[in-house]
Amino acid sequence: MPRLNRNALVVGAGIGGLSAALTLATNGWKVDVAEIKEENFTVGVGINHPANALRALQRLGVYDEVAAAGYHYQGIRRFGAGGRLIEEFRPTDPPDVPFQISMTRADLHAILTKAVTDRGVKLRLATTWTDFTDGPDGVTVELSDGSRNRYDIMVGADGIRSPLRTRLFPGNDPVATGYACWRLAVRRQPDMVLSEYWNSGQAKATVLHLNAETMYLLVVEAGSWSHIPERSAMSRMLVDRLRPMGGLIAYVRDTIRPDSDIHWAVLEEVFLPSPWFKGHVVLIGDAAHAVTPHLAQGAGMAMEDAIVLAETLDGAEVPQALETFMARRYERVKYVQDQAHAILVNEMEPDPQAKAAFAAALGARQQEITARLSVPA
Ligand SMILES: Cc1cc2nc3c(=O)[nH]c(=O)nc-3n(C[C@H](O)[C@H](O)[C@H](O)COP(=O)(O)OP(=O)(O)OC[C@H]3O[C@@H](n4cnc5c(N)ncnc54)[C@H](O)[C@@H]3O)c2cc1C
Picture 1 (cartoon, rainbow, N blue to C red):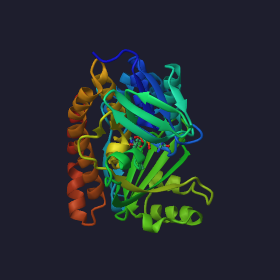
Picture 2: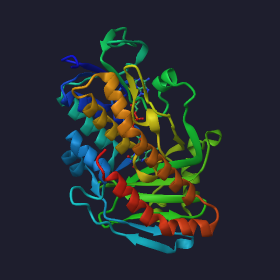
Picture 3: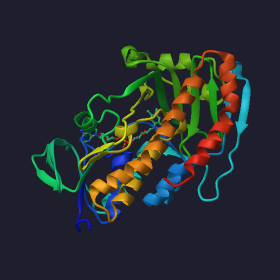
Picture 4: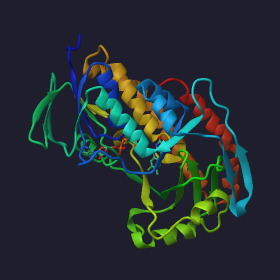
């Protein structure tokens, strides 16, 4: 039987870390979260939760707050080169949850932060680990505030550039996809209901609604860290990308100003082979498996990791639980990574015939992915 009153250190207060803190604290663990940022905030713009992520949010106990803060997806119009309407898709909701809810990252962060705080989790800002020693009964961690504590488990949810991954599994750095993304939040009008997707050949742009007032533009094109746009040129560059597009994308384009809060980043992936743990230290979320945003599954996979981790630890010793955790997580996450990568590559495909063939089969592919992910994590 595992010890009573077990304790955990979670490194990183992003979606994965807060979810792990929440599930462990709910199961009776005493949890510290070490977050390197000096203030508790999140970066980025919007986040979409497909049905399996909404089921994860239900299991985390925060679904009602998410549903109240977010936008219930109504459907999408997809346009090809020259503004030809390829498809208008209006989803049927599954019986238990909506097809998808989108929201601002700030709202999700506030909901998760409140939930962990309500469960007595200690959030230690401006704090990270400086060293740790694994032993038979747990891991002893030295923190940057000078404290030294023993924990039954250390959960690394420190994101795509995870220093913990570098320490435990050197050589598994993020891999650039060759593509980059632009992101921008703009004001939404009430009569704008459907999302829109436009593909000009060189760039693809999507507008999604996040709540009653806000919608969000995501543009993907070829890009690398060796060509980071100058901040002063970003608005002009983004407008240029969007010039061949119409509809909602053109509406957003016309709102862009030189001081618009535009985010730009290269899309990267992390492919850490199994296992994602060593001794009493385990990696979850982007630290273990960053995925391109093409299925909107990165956060969902991080939340599922957290839920499965807490479930497998319930009543089990840490080493045995981590074996079970890997058996339940690896194949599902790998499947999501492979599918998201395939969609990225194909939507940027230069050959119009190959692109059209892929687009024609996309609906069936997405249905199959949704069906596979409807099996509980
Ligand atoms: C363009 C884009 C769009 C996306 N859209 C979606 C979407 O619609 N739906 C979806 O599900 N996913 C989406 N994702 C993916 C999603 O954002 C990530 O998968 C998710 O945020 C991962 O959460 P995480 O907690 O693992 O990492 P993060 O959110 O990166 O959190 C890591 C945390 O660890 C902290 N940290 C880092 N180093 C240390 C350290 N040494 N010590 C202490 N703390 C540390 C960081 O400050 C941060 O708070 C998107 C990603 C991109 C790039």
